[in-house]
Image (cartoon, rainbow, N blue to C red; front, side, top):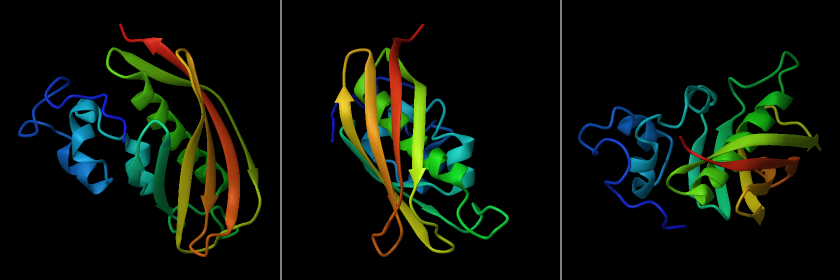
Length: 162
C-alpha cells in the first residue's frame, strides 16, 4: 500500500473523527482514516454498500451488493457498475495525488459483458498511468464466480488544493 499519508497530519484525531464508524464499515484501512476524516467515503458509497478490501494508488479492490442496486429488470444497474468504477479510480487517484492535492474525474467509460442478478460484485482497479497531472485506472467488475461483468476505464486530473 502507498504510504503517503502520515497519521495525525490531516483532519480530526481518531477520537473526534465524525466519520470513524463509516470508514470502518466501508473497510478503509486505519492508516487512511486521517486522510478521509473530513468527508468520510461519501454518501453514495455508503448507499451503494461499497466495501473496500484493498487500497493503494496502484490497485484497489472493493465489493458491492447487487441487491438494492438493480434496475427494473432485476439485474445490476449499469450505472451501479460505473459508480463502483468511479469510486475505485477516484480513490486511487486521490491516494496518488497525496497531501495538498486532489483528484477530479474527467472521463469514464464502460463495456458491459454480462449481467448479475444476485450476490456481490467485486471491482478491481489497476493503475494504467500514474502521472503528475493525470491518472488512469482500468476497473474490472466480476461476479462471485469470477466471471467478468464489465470493464471500465477512468481518467482523473490531479489538481492543487486551495
